[in-house]
Length: 251
Image (cartoon, rainbow, N blue to C red):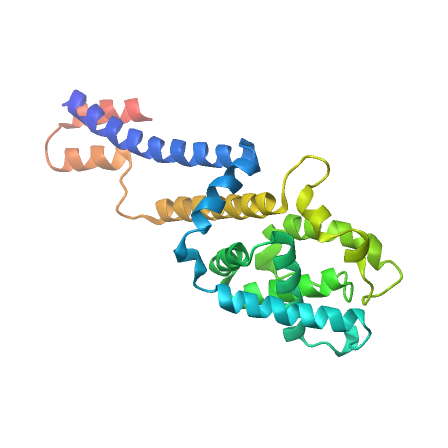
């Protein structure tokens, strides 16, 4: 009896441990494998036709953002007169320039939408537009987009100096160049797309882990070793002496 019970408990524990081990290995890989490796794989994946669903829409928003940015540079528009929708287009334009590919930009937008919801994704682009245009350098980022702050800071770093004393409407891209931004970050040779994908995958992994642990904790169908032991005792498969002995072994 005790051997059979121990076998059942071992199988259940092993299954649970395998899941935990798998998630641990996944997160470890996300943390320690160079982001360029992830980027290469994700680039190949996003180059498939399935990633082209919203390319036209994204390209249109990038074009509108570019037009607003050029008017802002030419003093035909002022920061104080821009609407949130226009800031959103600016955010799309800046993000598209940093990624360098409309299809991958659309993929990143979809990833953000899945994590933050449609409204959160829109608010994130508005914040990007305000910050990266220099109109509102301290624009509030939606709480659901806190995980994307490192990405935003890296994208904005080469622009900050060019905006000093300009309050928007300057042309920092002429001095620093988006190509310089694409070339690497901090001398480590990590492309912007690599960093975008790295942070996106890492955040998704953490969210998946939290959901899994929460679901496991709320799963009423899951039984502990003690629950199994009590069931066997209730069914008469073991007597009281065996029950007490096995209970002592478990505790």
